[in-house]
Image (cartoon, rainbow, N blue to C red):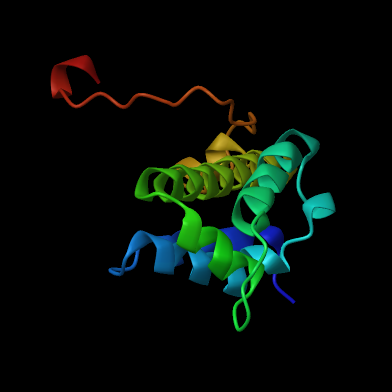
Length: 139
């Protein structure tokens, strides 16, 4: 079973294909977005995800089609673009949050181990990058 992040990434990649936007949007929803449980998303993203879901399933289908096909068929190109942009924004926001959580959970490595492993002073690396002089006179 894929995570919400993986499904949103796959949906964003579906939207990046070379096909008409409505076709890409329907594919992204059916194959990826429909599999995402909104409760698995952070609270800040749930409303936007539900809005995308509602925007893609609001129309009553005709015989032989589903709600997504009916909705996408009735959308203008601009409306389809806006929904596609929302999907990409959701993926980006979830990816940023996952990266921030991973950075907080990762143990910090001592500077000495990073520099040359000689076992010198064991000061934990801070979030400020170290600057190495490129000029011999400054070293």
